[in-house]
Image (cartoon, rainbow, N blue to C red; front, side, top):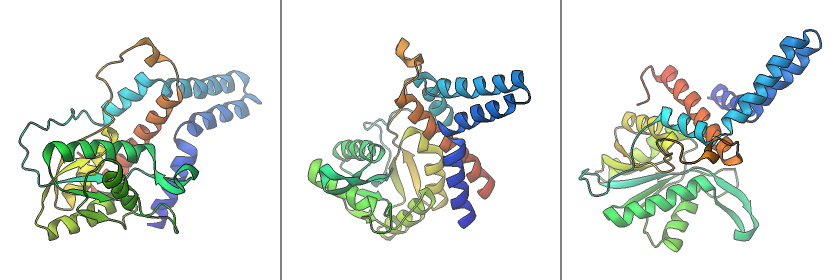
Length: 256
């Protein structure tokens, strides 16, 4: 477990963009001291990779490569018994809120989960433990936003999990105690394969209800221009690609 935690830290710090491509560029500059032509090529390759990953069109392609689940159709019968919303992080210091609050990812999931709750009238479970030792659990922040800001009641709150695997195991225990084995799973599109695989391994039939679904094809010329939002989406997509590969290695089965 400790090795896995350190592996995640190393990947986040040294592999994922923007650091990963910048490391490649720095390596190229170092190589250029002895082999100028090769070094310049490596450095330019790192910079080009960073610019490409920052294009929304490329980020969208990466997300669609991970999962092509369409938007959930609330008019289609599913026999789902509940809605599960997984936390996506929190802002530990938000002065305007007087403390911790939901991150952008978590807020997007909560907003979509609230919409589904109104459309389906299914009970809601929120899942996510504390970000830091002295911080409130993400699930508590999610519950407060759902009830106070969206007017959607929350029936179950899972507050101990620290990752997707624990989200699934701990939520499954709560759901099964209430006789629930089939749920709508609210996560981002790039999270669908791994999250669904974790819940199904825990004995819960999970119907994906993704948010943040990219368009099928680039919608405008600006999608080919590098942007901070494109780089952020590529970051999450690559993180999930690596996470899915790790899941398959650990559990010897495809995360689909």
